[in-house]
Image (cartoon, rainbow, N blue to C red; front, side, top):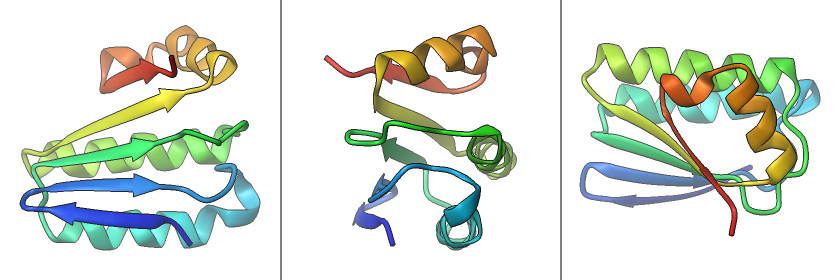
Length: 102
């Protein structure tokens, strides 16, 4: 289960493990419930996440699309350098904000 902090129209989500197929249903359902609340911005903090597989990427894209339709935004922060490289190669940073961990 992810740690979820709501502050006004903004939501911060901190997954407690890698975003891979084995946790996909749980993570997808958490994000789906959040999107239904029509937040202005959902920030996913990937600090400590070392792996995002194709299923995880699909969840992020679907969340972005749902938020975009509801006039909201997705931001992914504290992204590990290898995951950041994958996201930029796939040009995901052209669709939503992706910030590398410092």
